[in-house]
Length: 402
Ligand SMILES: [Zn+2]
Ligand SMILES: [Zn+2]
Image 1 (cartoon, helix red, strand yellow):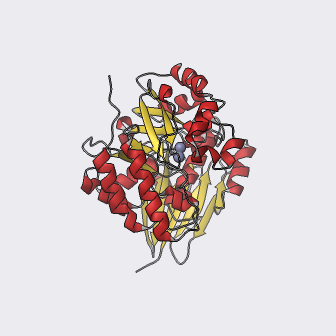
Image 2 (cartoon, rainbow, N blue to C red):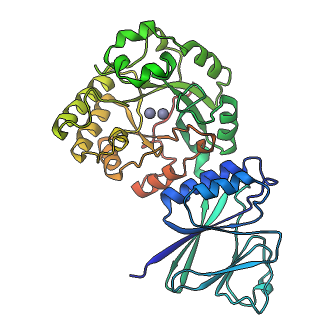
Image 3 (cartoon, rainbow, N blue to C red):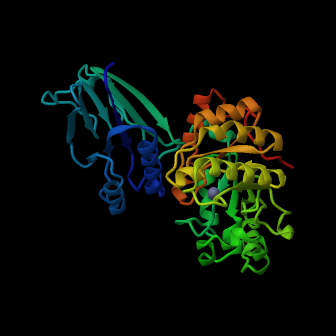
């Protein structure tokens, strides 16, 4: 088998094309980093006016080349022993350009390429926000467009989005988030703030105290009302409101009874276990199942956020013997399983078991940064590899509309 070299080409990244240029680039590069094993990224266009882009590229740890739109320059690269590919912004061809394939930043007339196969790179900054993924194997080049906003998005619901109320928010802001959700053409989006962040001070969450004793909820600082007020102001057919309810160590939802009503959706998450993760695996497995059993049986939450992420967070591999029992438990309690890629890589094997058990799948970006809003492309690819049509309601969790 020939080794495959992956190259990503991104065009149209000038701030004149979109005010969201930096976010689009971050989104694109996040996808390149996590889902395409790219040898290099080639940027076609002028990024000189945005220092931030340069800084961001430098910090992305990706090998990258920039072909500026201001010069009639071409960059010719041979990746391994493969064909020579010329990248240029302006469509021109001269005899000195020796290439087997040409990628240009602007549309190209057939006669200009002088018989050399060519392709024009799409604009990242124009909806539906595309880039090129080139796979090179030997002398063969396959080119695929990667669309950050595929058609399926019109039917998708992002059931997990944070706000500025999260302590882990990087730059979230309610109105800006709604704007981006609409830009990406999602069907719905739900604000689901951490219940523990709304009740407690950041400082109080550093220890396990408030997870150990649920009665602390009564004397909490409590920003719940303020959060509800703020998100209610933007509540609409598009924007739904809810919470990511934390699970206390006794398995009960960290939510006061008076705060249980009035939401479009409550999702639940087990962010901590009532044992240290250095305990023997059999012990951790038991505690994991016990706490999920109690938490899900409460009937409060409709979706379990990022199942098993707790293991990754603690640098442990997920015990696969938990897959079947958790899938069964979700089926019994009719709670959906969330596909979540935020610092997380869901395992297909678990989600296949969920489908077998009749558990619905929910899609969550778990956005903590504005560039992550509408980032459901990994989810769509994941569903495709499970053989599930992203628009098929038989398999996907759906918010009930009034
Ligand atoms: Zn979470
Ligand atoms: Zn979250």
